[in-house]
Amino acid sequence: MAAFMGLVGVGFLAFALDVGSLFRAKSNAQAAADAAAVAAAEEVAAGNTSSNEQAMANTVAKLNGFDTTAGTNPATVTLSTPSTGNFKGSGYVQATVSQTIATTFLNGFRGNQSSIPIVATAIAGGQSSPTCVCLEGTSAQDLNMSNASKLTASSCGVVVDSSASNAVGIVGSSTLSGTSLGTVSSNWKNSSNINNGGSISSSMTVVQGITSSCAPTMPAAPSYSSCVANPGGGSTNFTAGPSSYTGTVCYNGLTIGANGTTPTLNPGIYVIASGSLHFESGNGTVSNLGGQGVFFYLTGTASLTIDNGANVNLVSGAGTQSGGGTAPDLGAYDGILVYQDSSDTSQMNISGGSNTYINGALLAPSALMSFAGGTATTVQGGLVASQLKMSGGGTLTASAGVNEGSLAITSPRLVQ
View 1 (cartoon, helix red, strand yellow):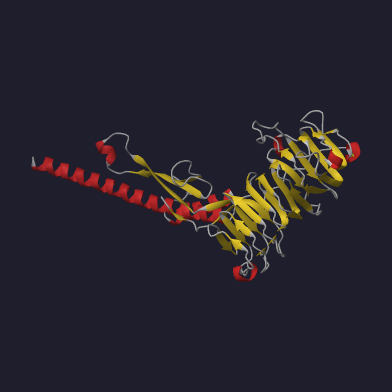
View 2 (view 1 turned 135 degrees about the vertical axis):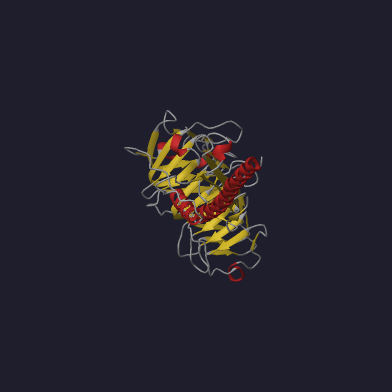
């Protein structure tokens, strides 16, 4: 009996040694997962690629004893974006670290227990704000607001790539509001650039000296051939655009709503190769008919002008129409209303009227975009420009649509 009890005691001691080893491995795996999650989240905040995130996560996991490159029994580190809970979204990263741990004595108590997989997860990240106004000028005043103008970034933020000390100027009772304002400039001063009644909403988080400039990917140029003159000459009612919404037309200038006319815009892709895409005041409260599911590509020396009092109704591909319903699908150009390519620096001038409805992004990465006049314009889809100038009581509301990236407004940290 004494010998038997001794053997049992030795067995339990061996069992305890294995269990202790597994608990220690689990603790080490959790430390590795915590470190990997934080490292990956820091890469996200810096705007680096997913390959950078994975490489840094693998590196710190190895420092904590879980080597993904080991020749025998390598660990695995898997990254994902949390889809549930309080920390879901692009600002957070979930890291899962796993490895099979060999046992010495457990197999004697339970068959097929020569090894046990150890898994640990962690979530790290920080609050981020989607960008819906991206200003890509690098050395001047990218955002200039005056004369009681108002810019609202609805549930999104503004990013300014300028490194100038006056990168943002808000004066004359003008107001900027949204979730965040990020500037590449680290020496921009609120006191010297926001004055004379100008203000930034107290709810905005201001982040200076950001290391990742805003530079969203622009769409590919549509294919087109010969371009024709302005149809109708801008003085009669006419129908413009392709006969099928899957088609493309090219114009050397296109004037809409001149002399009280109300031209009809068919859905489809419009290329403006020179001259102006010009929306005038039209007939009463309507400058154009149609305009549901359209995409305008401006190139060469083409420019966009929407006059004060022009009541345009323009919806990008697959966008929501003003009266409800969904506009025709335009494939790669869905969500984008106007794209002025980077070689075209012609200024965009946008005013509009009381019945203006614009659903789709306005993209002009190399041009100054000007909003002027006492009009309220809502752009459902965001803005990209070199500079944005607002004056004359202009009121602009922008919202996130096409992917313009996001701004980290709190430092990455372990949250779960």
